[in-house]
Length: 271
Length: 255
Ligand SMILES: Nc1ncnc2c1ncn2[C@@H]1O[C@H](COP(=O)(O)OP(=O)(O)OP(=O)(O)O)[C@@H](O)[C@H]1O
Ligand SMILES: [Mg+2]
Image (tube, rainbow over all chains, first blue to last red; front, side, top):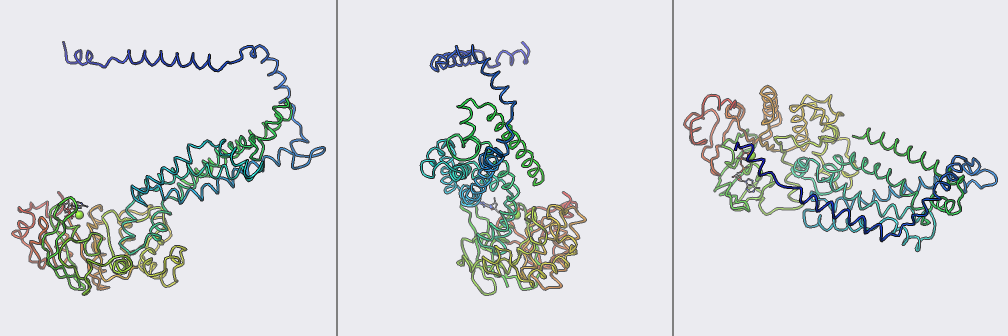
């Protein structure tokens, strides 16, 4: 037997493990389907529903879009889109500002291993709290309005932004901090001249990326009453107002694409 | 004046990097520290501005014993001592000018410096230092757009802006090519002569140390084994410092 043949013989036998996995996945799927009580008869009428939906969707209501007669401007899709954008924008801004101290608090470079672990734990707790749950709670406190949306997005963003900021701070070049120590700088001066110039571009880029995510969130959050387009979206869907729904969908698509393009462009410029 | 009296340094892991060092460095000297890797050169140099704290003995800077000072007092000590590093230690994403200006931070209240409010005098000092180093035209470019030699000059300008009495240099030319090395060493010599600033430099290249320093301190395994004028260095002293005689190309630093 050559050494190659011998090695081939020793090749780990994975097929048994793979088989177990495949069986387990199939079993899990079967259990899920039987447990979920999917109403299969619905599939028979779905064609009709979809046809009504698509003809309706193609039928834009321009006065609803721009909020002209018989609608008020504030009921128009353009206005609601701007509100949604504003919620995302302000929420992201608040989140980013608050995430900076959390980022420092979770950075080994700044506060050392022990405190960083505590900072990280706080961020994990914020992150695991689903956004929609947070919104539902805040709606009770602040009512069905844009403020609720802003706060939900602001608070929820801290979790991911803080973690990414901390990572940016920990990945940066530490040698300037040594030089700043040597010139007699104190901690604030080290943050200002050693850390911020190095991470400012990263922090801006991460925040823009988050803005992208938050625009989508702001739309969905409207569904639970946190202001913006979502409220009309859910209302029109429930009332089978396909023309109104179509108009809103158009606005969402345009808005998301526009924000995506702008944020990608700006991020490209930053790096 | 820098004075070591029976100084020893034992690191937390038990390594004794300095053993009973006694030295006196006068103002205006150009001292080269040589020795094998791990001999304790960096430890010696960094104990002078307390980047490393000694564990025994006394260390005086201008009659002040520094082993007990900390906080604000320590920062006041450090602002009078410039430091140059092998890898320049600049903020690469910041302009050359702002890098040099950081040499002034310890002279002003925290709030003012954090807001970037430096007096005009300081800004002129920074620009003059860049002029002295021959790179005034690079003032407003980002530090990462400069060559290694230019970056080390920015670091020197930063040190000069501190208005220091002493500049410590930990292998300042180790990451530079031979021609740039000579230029940067010439800069050190010029700063030493023109401004009377004491230079203490760790160096791997024996020939460079002998050429530029007026005094050589040889370290072996944490002990000072040679301390004298650089022109008196001969093969025998090199054997003392390095434990064996150096071949010609090693002396020239081409190994
Ligand atoms: N932070 C530290 N903790 C523990 N031991 C250290 C530390 N720094 C240095 N040492 C040890 O102390 C001794 C002297 O180190 P030092 O860095 O002063 O040597 P050096 O002469 O500068 O060497 P090189 O030429 O390689 O820079 C070495 O044995 C080193 O391993
Ligand atoms: Mg060293």
